[in-house]
Length: 182
Image (cartoon, rainbow, N blue to C red; front, side):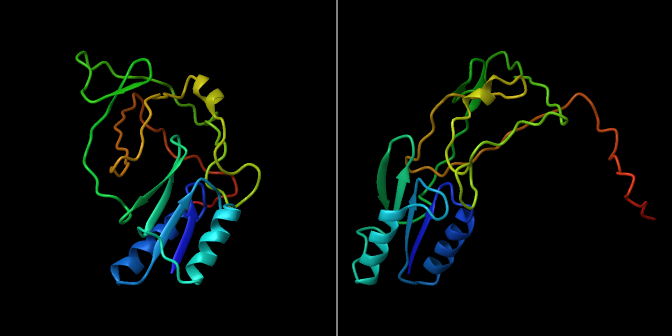
């Protein structure tokens, strides 16, 4: 079975879960992940599907497009083996491999009445989906942007962040049409 998805595909997580389940059960399965949304991928998806149906198999069961590099990589499995790596945000938008000596926190104020909008991303289809230039959002006072480029190099990406707040929530506001529950 050949599974084709995209980094910006709304069904990305399901495609990965299907691949893992089929692989764990010993199925003849391959995975291609390209730089597209759901329904895109046209020529690549068609060519790979026809080759698969004709009996041709990939040299490695996984082929991914590495964004930023602009190139395809073949891997023996997905996800690739990972190594833990801790990165610390520093002033100036830099990520470093050691915490800052002064351990001064990076601060910003979040206003729920003015949330940061979403631009592009994983959507089903359409002109608003996929990769978009969101650099204007980095100018907002409630955005902290780290400019260090992270790439897939045998690592599985994950992010763990900590935060604190200086005010406690006041309570949940109810709309007038909501009934009180006992």
